[in-house]
Structure formats: C-alpha cells, structure tokens
Image (cartoon, rainbow, N blue to C red; front, side):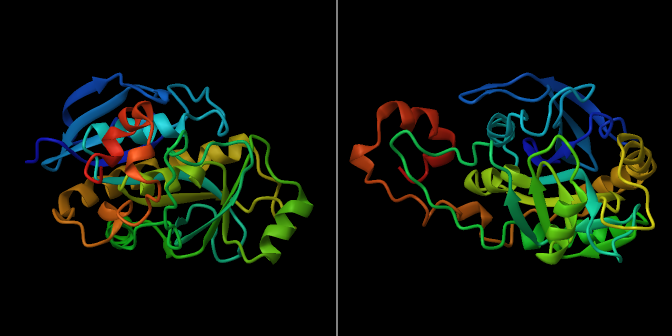
Length: 287
C-alpha cells in the first residue's frame, strides 16, 4: 500500500460511493488559486490511495466556465497525485460513437474563450508542450480497465471543448463534424493543459450521452438524456476505476513527470519572489 495519493478521479460526486473504498478522509484545501470545487475525498482502493473530486461541486452547482480548474489541479498535486482520470459526459459527433459507449480520446480542440489556461504568468513564463495532450501510457491502462469492466470502448479521437453551458446549435455541430471532431464536451480544457503543467499524467473516460444535435434521426440533447446515460454508466465507471487501481503501474513510463523541464523560459534571477512562492509546488525542482 502506498501512503500518498497516486491516482485522482475528477468527475461526479457519486463516483466515490463505491464498493471496496475504505479509510476515507475529506480534505478542504485552500490553494493560491482559491478553493477547490468541493472537498476532496481520499480513500484506499485496491491498496492505492485514490482521490475523488466532484468537478461541478456537490449537487452540481458550478458551470463549466466557473469550475476552479487551477485550484483543483493544484490541490491534487499537493496531495501527491501522479495520475488523473477525468470522467465526463460528452456528445458524439460521429455515427460509430453511440450513446452508452465510452471514448478515450487522444486529442483536444480548445474552443473555449473565457478560461484561464495556465498556472504561469506574473513574471514567470512557461511554454508547455501539449502536442499529445493525453498521457498515452495512462490512456492504455484506462482502456484496458474499461474493457475489463464491460464498457464498449473507443480509443482515439478529437475532443472539442466548448464554453457552454448551453448545448450547440445545429450549425455549430455540423461545423465541428466538418472539422473532423469526434466528441464534444465542456470541461476537458483547460483541465488537461493544467495537469501537464503540474506534471501529472491525465486521461479522459468520456461517456457518450447523445448525438449532439447533428443527427437527424435522434432527438436533440437534453439534460434528462445526459443524466439517464450517466446513471447507467456509473457502475461501469466505478468498476473501471477499481480495476485501474488494482493494476496501476508503480512507475510512470512517460514524459509527463518532466513536462516543465524544457518549458520554463524566464531567467531565474528576474522571477518575482511572490510568483516563486505561489508556484513553488510546481517549479521547486527546477529553481
């Protein structure tokens, strides 16, 4: 059994109400970027310390734009999290990704416009590499776990993030399809980019709830439709998390843990003291 958090799950508040999770503790963490969406629940699952964070707060009261993404990732980093699995709803932009299926995408298109996308600034510049925004190694492990849990799984595809909170118009949906997008959601950005800056492996278990609004033979997406599909898939998601925890590699076979090594460009002697202190958790091994 490991002592610190090795795996974090960002999703709905009901995910941690699962068999096999014990010795749970609730953490209320203040960060330099404010409070997290909700208290972080940490428990032991299959010998691993696993953290659960409700992205939209308990009772789902935070819009996708209002999610405190930086606080959430920073807090998970402070708990020692090395890997994050995001569990989210998405709309399908391709016929083969049917409602009820699970997609583990390999690309993101950020179409948001109101969100802070980086920890850096205020005198310290970093240009993080996100050509491949999802950790391939963690995605491999998640794909195996979801398949073993009985989910219909698709690996790969471009996940477009829109601002929300409204759903797409038909014109928008058809445009995203023409661009080659595979699935659509509202929270992958900037979460994945912040995780990379924090040198945490990140992947997404995207649950297809609908065909967005482009599909002429399907009804337009509604909140009720999304909730019904998510409820059906909760058991699969919980079982996939349990399997992932039971088989989680102890060593990380990827470059995520050194993502900042070639990203920091500001000369050390000109970095403001306040900024150094604010970002110490992320940068101390390099400065």
